[in-house]
Image (tube, rainbow, N blue to C red):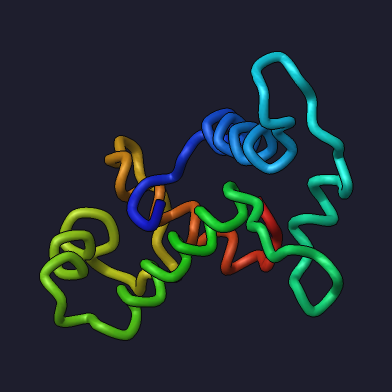
Length: 121
């Protein structure tokens, strides 16, 4: 999750598996009791939730963390390679997606874009 942007549909499917496990009734074909909504379960523990994470938001946060590493470690091999290919004349935060970006660059770029705007994906 810290390298590639997962599709929203994949994140939703994994969250549904979490739901099924958490609310499972214990037997095949039985339904468990939904004591709390999923949004309440995703609240921090300090606010009465269980601290579960919304996976797509967490995925983008991890990608933004990778972008931060590119900014604070300009001497790293990954940074040098990405800089030479995608943003040779500017800084990481000023870079654009380009015309034919790799999936890794698009993923990192989505993390940087959400960090710039301050919006959730």
